[in-house]
Amino acid sequence: CLVGSEMCIRDSTMTVDTITSSKQAIELEDKYGAHNYHPLPVVLAKGEGVHVWDVEGKKYYDFLSAYSAVNQGHCHPKIVGAMNSQAETLTLTSRAFYNDMLGKYEKFASELFGFDKLLPMNTGAEAVETALKLSRKWAYEVKGIAENEAQIIVCENNFHGRTTTIISFSNDPVARKNFGPYTDGFIKIEYDNLQALENALNSNKNIAAFLVEPIQGEAGVYVPSDGYLKAAKDLCVKHNVLFIADEVQTGIARTGRLLATCGDCSCVNKNCSGEPDVKADILILGKALSGGAYPVSAVLANDDIMNVIKPGNHGSTFGGNPIAASVAIAALEVVQEENLAENSYVLGEIFRSELSSFAKENDLVKSVRGKGLLNAILINDTEESSTAWDICMKLRDNGLLAKPTHGNIIRFAPPLVMNKEQLMDCISIIKKTISEFNN
Image 1 (cartoon, rainbow, N blue to C red):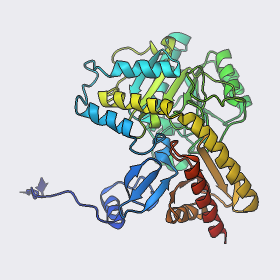
Image 2: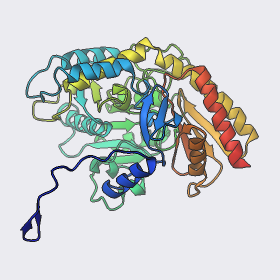
Image 3: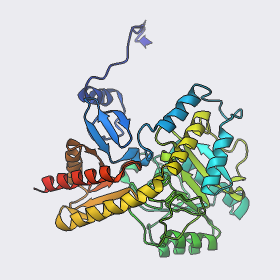
Image 4: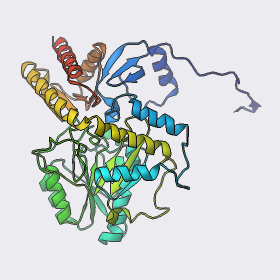
């Protein structure tokens, strides 16, 4: 490297630091890493099933599951085995060539979720961007909207990622401020408001798609009214508008169904009564698609939509690589073989029942909401308060890891491999911690 006008040579014996304490690890991140996250101060070094351990060896229940990426539990042996085996054989070819795993994965996932085709990507935000591009191209080439005039309807308080385009239709000031100019082409409406959707569709003939989260996770686990998604899909059909379901967080058994929208898929959970199936035109998946072992995301659609994509229109060097394909197949097989959607449904009912009863006795818990094992409690304090954060710090001390969202909401989303005994232990920790805090 050059320092001023002199040449310097770095010490060739430089080694990577050995982490011996949580304090050391936090200090290293603080000094050398960008400050784009505000983690709970716990440094994890090991994970297995529903548990994680910190550098000092303390054991915790994981009640965040890497934002639902680790639905199958930490370091699931089948998923890790598939990853290791493939890594020793072939890691990456790019899409310049075929590989022997991608077609197997595309067939398996397409048939499981009930679509003709899958477009592989790596991250959730990439998959959302892919769905936006796909719906716009369909709008111009199939629906007949004039080029550059297509609009996409989104919901307020959404979270679809943090790319420049995605934050353009976010109303989170922290995600948006000082990142403009923003991308045009989006119309924001209130979530869970059918009249707002109908008004937007009636007033604009250039609508390509409606992008929606079946449950708004980052916003605080907001569950829409019964029948909202089905009625929204019906409106989209009426107006020849694509219904895009962002199931990056809600998909892969998290809400007690294989998908929160379920749709015309091989659903492994039969407890779907009371909620109509909704088949998305474009389905976005990520996170638990790999069981948290590897970055894998996907967009699924039928031929009448997907076939507008031609060579050179879209791609990714790592999208559809052999490791990703192998890992995703194993991750989806685990969901089926271990009945994780069914388990999520049953344990979710217990969790909400127990915490709802507790809320009636404790003024600090205002309400409990969620589906399956995607749940949240609303703390009876303002968003600007530190109460929810302080509760999460006490939960950490008592052996359970969770994180606040939007100030006064705590999200609870454990791995779906949790059993009833473990869940009841966790419920006891949550009740005990909040009661201690309340006192």
